[in-house]
Length: 357
Image 1 (cartoon, rainbow, N blue to C red):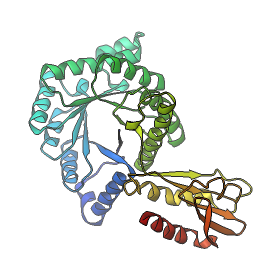
Image 2 (image 1 turned 120 degrees about the vertical axis):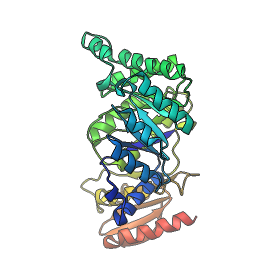
Image 3 (image 1 turned 180 degrees about the vertical axis):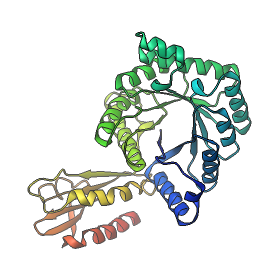
């Protein structure tokens, strides 16, 4: 199961030069370590295609070009080492223009994602939805037209996404198409919202689909950072794997190896700032994903001795407050007692030691 996210800003050639360019490359490398398998970029014009093509030559992460309205942009992207083209064929400009993209993509052996959105349906389907047609059925019909078109030209390297901002529409559309075709499906709730609302909505839709075996790649679309989209995707897959076990469904493809962070919500007993510590360490801990890829590692961040070593004794590494001190523990055994000011430094030392074992 592949997690993807989408770059939030437009890039220029200047952004890829010098230290700024190196920072972008490092950020993309970190996304890969955190569990991101695909990174998508909006490509609104030819200049953006050129910039993306240059970036694709700088990084190892597979990059996806997201194209609307102008097939010439897609054709230009295909001149570079782009991993995939995302098209909304309904607005790309007609049959022959889509055909030109398919022919070049086939020669380059580059797959295409058929992207159907509730907000950009073909005109006739939009009118029918306004007249009362079920939106999920309209999404499926739009996807079906494009699948038939791709099959007509014998282009088979594709997957399909049908996205809506509504949970029920997203679930229903993917269930219907999943029954009609074995085409790979990219799933997610589009424009899901800010962090908390977006994670809640995405979790509801994705858990329903993933535990039914529907979906091959996912994105959690948040009005938040790309890193938080990846973290949310990992945790949803982790939750889906556990839910699948309860339903006697296939959980293997959903399992996410790596670091599992457990942290207490904090209360009046706390002797340690769990919120601040977790905020500082969460990106780095998730970036340890690849180092622990063959096993699960649990890190516990606790606020007091009540929720400390004993309640989190299963943790491979934990930290908790205890009066005016901080305890570092492993599997319930306290290994170091330190001052709060030393917490970050000592935790880092023990994290390094953990990676050696």
